[in-house]
Image (cartoon, rainbow, N blue to C red; front, top):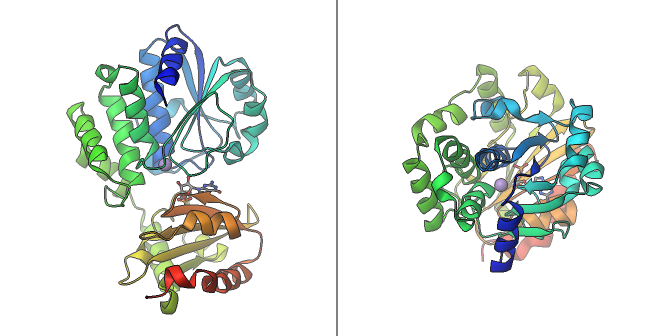
Length: 339
Ligand code: 5GP
Ligand code: MN
């Protein structure tokens, strides 16, 4: 955002507004953390603000301050529609294309509200009046802190805001280990701890709430892991039947794909998860270094994301999806093979 944009946003927020804040579908820690962090800030600044998520999110996020106020469009459509159409401002957080909000797309596209995007994914669409897009950022939560700071309001960051923003930075950086983690990220994390974020408690709340069944599912996923050594690639598959056996709940497979990257020498990882309900194979792609899984996902799997983390989907069945995946590896021979 340039100076003029910052002044524009400041003037918009200088009087109380009706505001809707929206994360992407199947929201993750960064999406929920950033929308809640921004919500608390907007409410403290005397706005009437509400978060509308396209759908539900994993239980391990259901302790965040303010979480119970989040509306879900898919199950509360009648309540959500008028809020969207009457809003003065709509913030869209942690995504950059309206296709990422599923069934909310029509209502948001046609809303009269001024739209503001805060996001760190590549290749943003041009739907917002104010676009704060920065692909070098670790997380949208880091950007929300910057946003509050740019508006001259860092003094308003309290324990609730700090807790929400810390959570999203932690989850999107794999606990501060991915290469997107910079000195600036740590600077902000330091500020958040200073404002009351309890780092150890947050970590426990997010990561140490496994069910026994989730660990069994992880065991199953690890047994299914395959390696394609010549392309420094590893992938995991999970069939619907396997998910059922371990009583799969939303969020249970979060982080599984990273086990592939923990193998020595592996720089490209994928997980393919069968969903009978959505009639698709859900795909998560991860990489290390320069290899862009955003490009792979955009070109072959109807998705996108970042250089080192992207999502996508396939309409083929699981085994055909794997065949397709294996068949495209030679296209990336130069990037993937040992030189
Ligand atoms: P995940 O694999 O954890 O679902 O997603 C990895 C990253 O890619 C996240 O930042 C997520 O927001 C993004 N992402 C996931 N699915 C899609 C998609 O279908 N399109 C785009 N553009 N980004 C996605
Ligand atoms: Mn994010």
